[in-house]
Image (cartoon, rainbow over all chains, first blue to last red; front, side, top):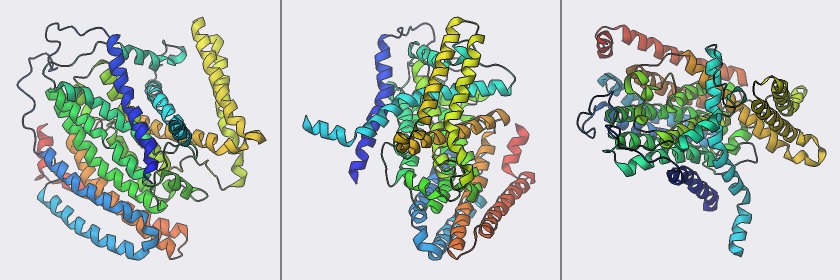
Length: 119
Length: 438
């Protein structure tokens, strides 16, 4: 079984080496970067950049990321169920209804709390 | 030495396919860009690129060469190592998804039994490239673009994954090859699960950061989003990743919903004349090229045009090869690849059509659409398809089961839209106040 993944590994190495080789080899052809004026400063529409950017940003992004984990794990649970659905039939549908029902309660709670609200 | 030979013998075809994909995919992405520019020009009543080669046919190559020799700028307060590797991660993830996709029954690097899951998992690694690139640039625009992009991609990835679950439910397998074979002789899943296909279409546009969901790159607000500090070939690598991702999502949709490499009307005998379509299609393109050859303004352009026509003739000959009895075995491989790539092109064409038709969304509208509409609807869609399969097992005929489940899902969709409109009309809504301010 794992032998199926040998071509995948080789392909991964080739796919990664394509941009790396292009970046490294063409370094010898490219003109050297000059350090004229504010060329190496980050772009901020002409004004000098204000402070470091690795500071704080909106908490909304964290909430979206956490919600993503919940719903993506749910998707991952659904995949094996979907593959075996032909064998499970009605029983599989009912069990999944229960699982999704619990999730739906959580979704409705999030909705009422306004966690999905993007301000 | 003999061990190496043995290894090469075992993995000869996968290795050849890997080399072909690594060589062709960037070129293909370049030509998708040209196709996009030409279609955009056509829809806006312009000509588009016309100078480099006849009808701009050499434009992608010229662009690639220009970008390769451009000056390389790394901002001075950027995190150099992360800045260097971020685009590489993006493009590797996008290309790696191709290792499990089957372009025709023969052309596939590795037949994995978890094919589809592997593709979804690997292609979503591209998000790392985007967020790392935006963070490493140490610029406000880059960081904001990367955060937006990540929030958008993960929001719509759930919807896309759930839409795929619907297709997997019908096929009963995750292997790309088995999914296509399950559609053989039956109906393509787009006709069984039209809502699932629609959900995947919208979610895949959002996932590839394309208009109308191209907020991470909204020029009027964020300059170029996470790519603001990237220039020259690094920028080209990001660009390549974006277009390679487009080809990947189009291939997933083709495999799961549009019957993969299967010819349309496979089960209908009187439609078998469609077998002649692949060679005739290339023959027509070649004929047009030769017709245009003497009309080119420069002799060099005429030459390139004639060369292109010759290439099309060669492809037509390759597509006609299965009609020679001695090579009849090559038919599924050659024609399969043709139909697969044709469907992928049509899907990408619909992407472009949508891009040139709709205005850009606002970010809160985008998140609203994702979390209030796409995700609930895709869950209901999965359940609807589950009911469909149970009804089919209970010996219902196809149409009543289809109308009942798809109609039910559509009703839920209408209710979701109605609910959202009611909510937007309410003056106490927080989202509405910002709307009034902005």
